[in-house]
Length: 151
Image 1: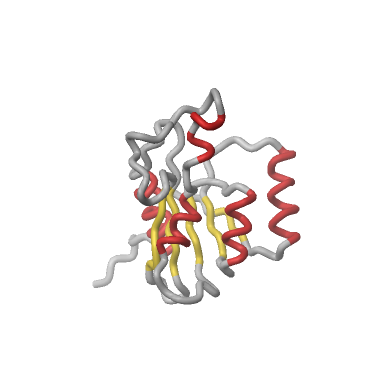
Image 2: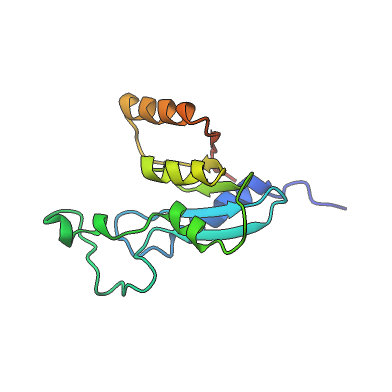
């Protein structure tokens, strides 16, 4: 007899994104992304970290101070890493599962790759911040879905 209590594809892919986040060396923010095609095949994963070729031990991870000595000028976001790690052709119709709400730059990358977005953000967002994302995603006709991750 077939099990009936198995997880959905959405839960599975969000779980992969959350697990991928654990690869991040950032002690404050761990973000993961899972890029999936329309046949439910994983195309790529990514997490927030230093660019390929940069030694994590030699790069800054601080959050405050001189901007050149903080992580913000160097860390590559999970969504962009997943897109860059993909070695295939078009991403038209693909979906990206992200552990948190994406920044406006990653929103452009996701939209430009014709990718649908599912996120499970756990950060508290003020109303103004939420409206900014709602207006931005509506403006560029990006399909974004909030996915509540739970088993």
